[in-house]
Image 1 (tube, rainbow, N blue to C red):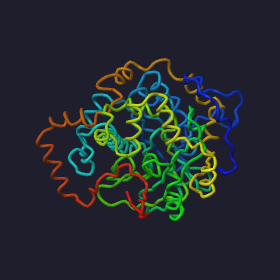
Image 2: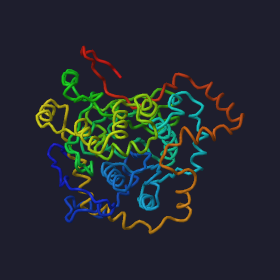
Image 3: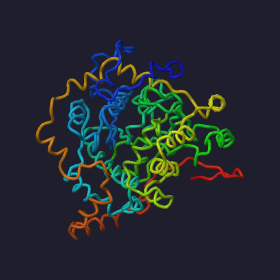
Image 4: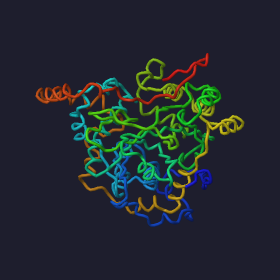
Length: 461
C-alpha cells in the first residue's frame, strides 16, 4: 500500500460518546473487502506475531487499535486490563474476539507478580517505590514478563509491547505488512527497534486521533543530522524537547529462551546481549497529547502535587511535568490557550517549511485502514455479537482484589513480597550469582531525543 497516494477518508467527523455509535459509524463501506472477515489467521501464516499491552482504555480506542494491527499481520493480543478496560461491558467484548487473551488485575495476579524474580534483580530497581509514571513502568515490565510465557505457550515467534495510543507503521516492507517486515529480518537478529514518530495535531478539537491525525514529526534516527539540528528551534516551538514525550521508539523481540523485558521500550535476554537492528523506514506512530482532554486525563491518574519539585518524582519527561502543572493549576480557558501554543500546529508557514525539510511528514495509511474498518461495520458487529454478560467467574475476577485504575507496583506488590520464604530468597540469590552481571544493565526508560544547547552543542539525553 503506497501511503503517499492514500487520502484521508472522511476523517474530520466528530465522535459520539457511545462506543457503539462511534465505532459503527458510516453508511457505505469504503473498503468492502473487509466485510465478513473473521481476522482469525491460520497457523500457516508466518511469522506469528503477538502484541502485549497494559490498558485502562475503552472500546472506542482499543478496537480500532487492535483491528488495525490484525490487518497488518498481528495474530494474538495479551491485554492486561484495569479501569474502564476491565469493566464487564468492555471486557466481555474483548474476550469474544479470536486471538485475544484478557488478563485482569486481580489479587491472584498481584500475588503472582509479587513473586517475580524481577524484585530481586537490579535492572529495574531504580524505578521501584516511586509514584505515577514509575509505578506504571514497573507494572508494564511485570506484565511483559508474564506475556513472554503466554507468547511461548501460544507458539508466537515475535512479541511487541505497545500502548493503545501507538500504531505500528510497517513502511519499507514490500507490502504494508508487519508480518512481511518481520519475515524479512535476518535470522541472527533478536530484536528490531521501531523509531517512533510523534503525532502533530493541527486542531484542538480532535476526538478520534487515529482517523483525524495525518501529520507526524519524524524521529531523529530517520533524519539527516544537519536537518535535525539545523531546524531544532523551529521544531520545538519553545517546548522542552524536539518531541513532547519519548523519542527512543519501541521494539519487537523474537520469542526465545531467557527472554525478559528491559522496561516498556526494549527487551533483553538473561543469557546474552541481544543482536538488534534499527529499522530505517518503519516506525511506531505515537498519538501523544492528540486530544485536549489528554491534559486532564493524565492529571487525574496521578496524585502528585503541581510543583516543580514534586512532579519530578512522578514523571520522567519534562513536557509531562509541565503539562501536569498546567492541568492542575490553570483554568479551562488557560489550559486551552497553553495547548494551542505548545501542542497544536496552527502556523501554516512553519508547517510547510518543516514538511519540505522532511521533519514533518504525512502518513495516511492507518487513517484509511481504520476508517475502512469502521465503515465496513466490523466494530459495531463485534460489540453486537459479544455475550450479553460475562460468566460469573469472569465477572468476579474482574472486580476482585485491588482492581483499580491506579498502579500498584510500588504499593501492593512489595508488601506481599515480604512474606516470601528465606529458602526461596536464597535460591534466587544463588541463581543470580551464577548468571553474569553483564546482562543486568539498567532498564531503558522513555528517553527524549537528542537536544541542542544555546552554543549548538549536541547533548545526548
